Length: 143
Image (tube, rainbow, N blue to C red; front, side):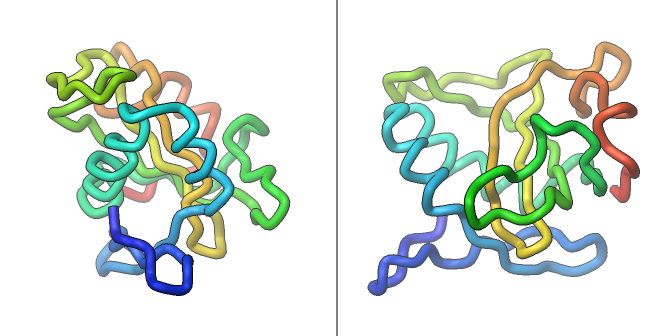
């Protein structure tokens, strides 16, 4: 993940914007929460999140489920979900592991281009590059 600037704000992270690239930042509140969860979560944040944002296997727009919305104090409406299947994962203690077969890594971005959530979820049994229930959770697949 991009290093923080000297003023404490996170640097931008490149993310695919359909036919071009855009810059997104990470919610400071969510990043602090990840730090408390341990080394494995921070390594995934640093190494998996940027890869999924820059080279997603799918992007959905229009989040339908409340659990996927950005409910943080300064958050906006959920906008996009980036999906990927990284070839690496990490244990809670930070040990590097292989791919998580049957799982996808999701990164949620709001309309202000702030990453507000990221996590592993079970993959769709018919399309292992997509999360379960993607047809109900999102309005439109744009990639």
